[in-house]
Length: 316
Image (cartoon, rainbow, N blue to C red):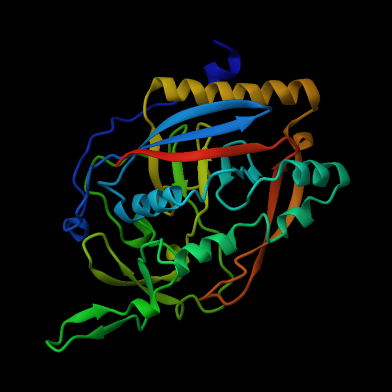
């Protein structure tokens, strides 16, 4: 075992019991508590395929959202657009080999990330428009009453974002919750520029169909996810939904192999991680519905692409 791999092995893995969730979720109908996904990543012309277990019993909205995106092929042929020591960020940009290589060579990676052919916001909103993604967040007037005085959802007021199933947004898992672990996947959201956060309230629909008022800040995820590649993460489970884990030791070994390959490549071709990446300023949230303002984000983009070749659901 290499020294790099030995370092990663120093991670305590909690037991993964299939335990019930809070009363707000008790009405959620599910096919299985733990669907499975197969994620194939390519680096330097080598593919690495990892099996994942999804925790639908604890995070039904998030898992459904991820499955719907995967079924639509949304994640296929996308890139890790932000490379950090603890987390790889993906789900926002497509990959074109010729254009990516040219952007690195010409120093025009900012233009690549500002090209509608590669940023995925249009594709995501197209899925929303076509009804391919199930709504879970609504404007604060997103309900009406039927003839019996029962409150019902107004689908015309649905937003394109996802209900954040984590502690600081009022989503409680009674027991059995796992923390942020090596290889885990988190549904990620960018911070929004909102002058009056108190006024930026939305309605969320829980897994059990409950209607709750919540801050938009925590219910603004779309397609972005983070893959934890270190012993810790800057993304606390109190603020981000950790919804999937490597299924077994074989999957962990594959991730080890991928990270070893990246480390070895950097050792051979570059002086450090910072030389391996390009700093990019990207415009994001172009179609923001609540904040009503596009923002900018800084990325550390690998010069040699880390490509999400495919995300396939193998068990429902």
